[in-house]
Image (cartoon, rainbow, N blue to C red; front, side):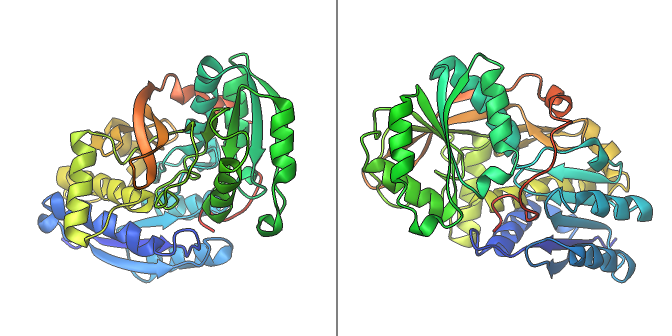
Amino acid sequence: MEVRIGILLPRSDMFPTLAMDFLNGLKLAFKISRSELFIPKLLIESVGNATGKSLLQVAEKLILQENVTLVISFCSVFNLKELAGIFGAYKKPLIHVDLGGNVLKEEHTNPYVIHHTLNLWQSAYFSGVYAANTFGKDAALAISFYDGGYHLVESFVRGFTENGGNIVYTYVSSMDYKSESFESMIKGLQNANPDFIFLLFSYKEGNKIVDVISKSPLNGKVPLLAAPSMTGEMNSSENINIDNVFSISSWAFDEETPSMKSFQTNYSALYNDAPNVISLLGYEVGVTVFAFLEKNQDIPVRIGDYVKSLIFESPRGELKFSGFNESLVQTNKLRQFLSDGNQHKNTAVNTIDLIDQEELYDKFKDLPYSGWQNPYLIT
């Protein structure tokens, strides 16, 4: 039996090795899952920034010309309705992949499509719930012009205000953050005197914000609740003098669980490098695909129906699929950005049980799409 898997991967400045990282994680999952019984043929296509009609054209080419068994596509929700429609029409299975910066809608739910994400918008909502019950009821927001275009701000604010929180100050950065001193941001935050500050920045802008705050009177005096991307693994290689920084996400690479330790050990042994969030995504997609092959000797066509009964252990914990066919974990990790004497890194300090996740889709069903057409963070 030949299993032919088409893979559509974008280019990224933030993750310059995105395609290789994703493929490394995918191939590792096949390697350690006894996949020699089912060695898939991978047909890999670069799709630029994964926007526009070219993504749809390449996907249709894989179906018609290459006769693929399955397609895995990294793209945003802006192309997802049309993309899902193509696979529904041809009755071919699709795994849609992104980091989860935008809420999925009912129009994306299709028996031929599943969604594998890192659940960023859900984590933002539960960050708001946790913050209101832990850090205090008065929050200041400092938001990137770019990152603020997705659904993370609205998710956080709803979780926070539904639990008695108040937003006392909001700062949105300019488009040209490179020439911005952020003095007005620091002054505004000081004047607002919040119980804590929610920060939504990433990549180079996130690094600059961390540097500015570390040199300000705010450092160590006010708790900082940052988006996971701000203290992500790509930003934590240097020892930064900043204190009292936390983040909440669905993953923590230092978590002492057998599944996470095994994933990191096997990845490092095979590639002589540490995994990142992209290779984690690739690995979990690979584990999902192998679960299909192991049980069915093939990829089920109505993949969305099949995953409703699928539960497996991932490096992030027990993973199952929602009614919207999106991968969900059962806990989030509270991470503190701490120094080990040589560098700062995220350290898991607690776990947060996630309650009523399925209800969030209905809660956010009227939230309009906004922001950028490329997948969240993949810029």
